Every structure is written in structure tokens, then in C-alpha cells.
Length: 342
Ligand code: A3P
Image (cartoon, rainbow, N blue to C red; front, top):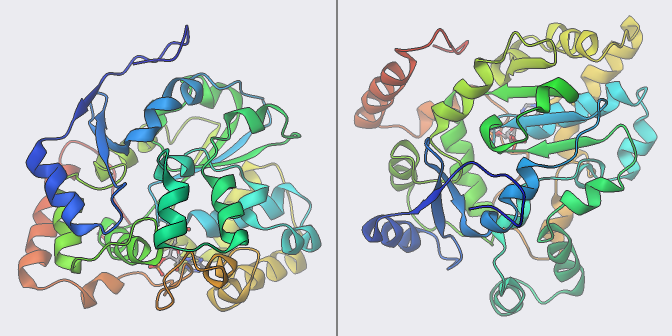
């Protein structure tokens, strides 16, 4: 695999036909079509192949700031925090420019296959605004990033191994991890929220895909462990969603120190208020409600949803609880990674 002369060291494989069939049965959108990338076998939408080498080789700048996560781990929350600290707490601009425009999103394009436009028009929305938004997010951002003014803020759910190998020698990375049981519940709702995915199964069916590494960018633990291994690098800040949730002041302080900022107590207090779940959920610059207005999102789901730690307990039966415990224990055996909730 690779594009032109660019180096991309990983091969990809097809999923087994029965795995593809199982996935395609559960997602109503016919474009959920994964390949398995590299030695860790990350499951990624096929369209990733078009850009894999461009992403791996993207030119970096010393003042780049990446916010990286496995999806639904608190990315949006952290993006807003990082953006505000890095931009002298400019709330006006943060309100005026949607987060999506403040942070080019490296890997969103791969959810849209070649003929997404026809599919969207027929099955999702033929609203002109919706099609314009989709056009924008279906376009890879590596080109756009060449002309994005510094300091660039970049969002990605890709694991470190699929990003440029010199990333940490150049920009800064804030990585956020979250209890995988909450990530699974949140990802289940997210897969129902976005009509380009349209998950139609039960949570139990979703969970079975998730722990068998048959969902986007799983295996989950490989993703987190790659970042955990780099947690002591001076350009890496490794955070947990649960700590942000339980003790926002000290996490905000850590992020400020990492970015070389020193907000006053009053500024810290305003920032925490701005980032509170209640305010965040109403904040139109981050809550994606505009995508709902033009028909791209399901009406009965929300992007900023519950904002709780441990909400997974309402979704897991006894069998799944035990299965999760074993899965987590097996995956933590060879590492000192520990989540605050475990
Ligand atoms: P839930 O679905 O469990 O509510 P991401 O931004 O990576 O997609 O993560 C989304 C998750 O972070 C969602 O979790 C969302 O509600 C939660 N979240 C977003 N903003 C938050 C905030 N200000 N406080 C607490 N949780 C927040």
C-alpha cells in the first residue's frame, strides 16, 4: 500500500466474508466497509487507503497541536479547552467559528465513499446545506492543512502508529482515554446519531462488534496503549476523561502548563464554567445541532449526550459485565496502564 513515492509501511487485509456480512447487517448504511490495517489490524473504512500515505507523511510544524483520542472519549471537550487556552481565551471567536472549522479533522472523510452524494440525496437529506457540509467533510484535509495558518489544531481518531512517525518531535499531542465500557455505550449512540452509519442493532450486538475488534479503529486497547507508551514524552499529555469529569480544575491546570499558559484564577473559573456539561450542550459551536437541523443526524440522539462516567452500568447485563471484566483484565495484563475507574 502507499501512494506514489510516499512511504507507508503497513499492509492491509480484507475482513473475513462472514465478518463483513455481520457488520453490514447491523449498519443500515451500505458504506460501512472496513479493511484491517497493519500488524495491529486496525479496522478502518476502505476509503482510508486513498489517504493513508498522505496522512503518514503529512508535513508537520513545530507549533502544531493534535488532539487525539479513540472516538467518544471526550475529544470535543478537550478540543475546546485546548483551543481556548492556546488562543488567549478568545470566547468570541470560539463562539463564532464552529469547532469543526477550527480543527481540521484528519479522518472524517473516510466515512464517505465515492458515491456518497447519490446515497445521501436518496436516503439522508437532499437539503443543499446538508450536501454542502457533507461535501466539505468528505474531502480529505491534508491539502487544506498546507495552507492552514499556524498554530494549527488538528483532530484525529487515528492511532499514533498511523500518524507521522516524527509527530512528537514536532507538534504537541493531547491524548484522551476513557473507560472502554463508556466509550462503547457512547459509540453505540453515536452510530445511531449519524445517518451515514445508521446502526440498527441492539447495544449488545454493538458491544459484540466492539470487543471483537470489528468496529471503527478498534482494537481499542492497542489504540490507547500506543499513546500510553509515549505518555512521558515532553510533547505528549495523556489525560483521562474521568479525571476531567471529576476534577476539572487540576486537569485544566495541567493542560495550561503543557501549553505554556498561566490563566488567572478568574480566567480558570470562567473556562470551567464554559466547559461544564450544561453549557457545553447548549453551545452551538460544538454541539453539532446544525447537522441535525439539515437532516444529517437522527432526531432522538444527541452529540453532546449524557456526559457521565459509569453510565455503562445501565446497558450491561451480568454476562456482558463479566465479559467486559475479563476483556479488560486480559488487555491490561502486559501494561501498567490503569484507568481511574478500574
Ligand atoms: P456520552 O455519550 O457518554 O455522553 P467525543 O467528543 O470524543 O465524541 O466524546 C463525546 C463524549 O464526551 C460524549 O459522552 C459527550 O456527552 C461527552 N462530553 C462532551 N462534552 C462534555 C462535557 N462538557 N462534559 C462532560 N462530558 C462531555
